[in-house]
Length: 365
Image (cartoon, rainbow, N blue to C red; front, side, top):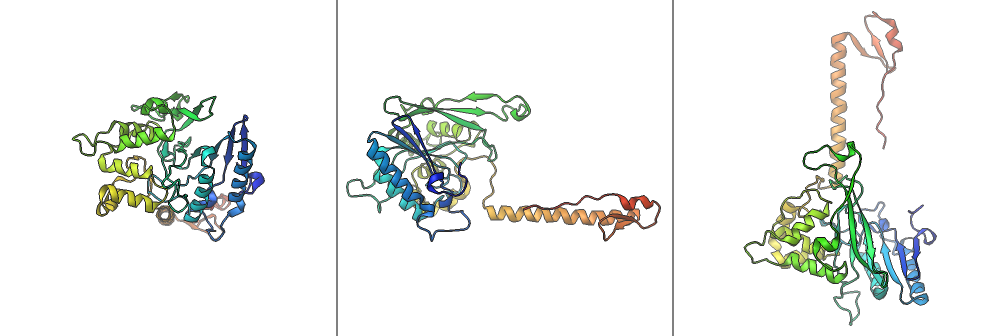
């Protein structure tokens, strides 16, 4: 989508009819994991200035336009490790702009988590004016993924919108089930895409507006004192959808609260405060450690650095064992490695073996 990092001419603006505007941002540069870290730059590639200028022009030329902000990494926390996706300073600037043009932004469309999710976020207190304190921002919808690398079934969305007000009303999710009921994975057969229940049908809400998303959150939070509080129908529906049909373990009440807080948090600090209010601070750490994202059954390593180190260790172990095995075998057969990298027959029984090629393995990084 972007030929280089963002410069305004390469940032995407798509006019869909007279009243819909899609603005695609490069959010990789705001990531907490971006390397090199460049947080000393307040507005990388002047993208925020460009975004505000684009919104101002759109508002001036057509006050009734509906804007959809599109990007990859969303300005929120992850549902697995609850890690904060963006640096604080970029969150602050972004939400100041979104709040300023709130009435014309229909929704924020993001991905990255490989999970069908949404967020109901409130503007931080430090950026809202006195008339909009604690105001809820436009809905943030997070799409699933075509790649199954995190254990999800490949999936994509077909979005429906109202032809009059041009707001998203619903979406269908098409799923490629890789393994079902012990059958051979679909990748070995002819791919068959199936349509799952729409968002409207799954959650029994009229649309995907912020009001409907709040309704879903209320249902997730209900029944805390009931005998059946560990069996929440809305949570069961969510578990079916997040990884496009891949079975998930049950999500009891405490696990459900981690999802409720995740869906309402911009930063990790905000998430911790939410969990403290619902569960008590002494239990938060154990809950996060035991529930992960609350349900994902796919295997993910807890820390990327540890994953890399483990991979390097395994590779080195394989190489060492291979060399030892080769030397032991060479001693048994009378062959030994020659300094030129070919095999030498020490007994000179077959001089042609000097010309045999050898295989060299190189680690490409």
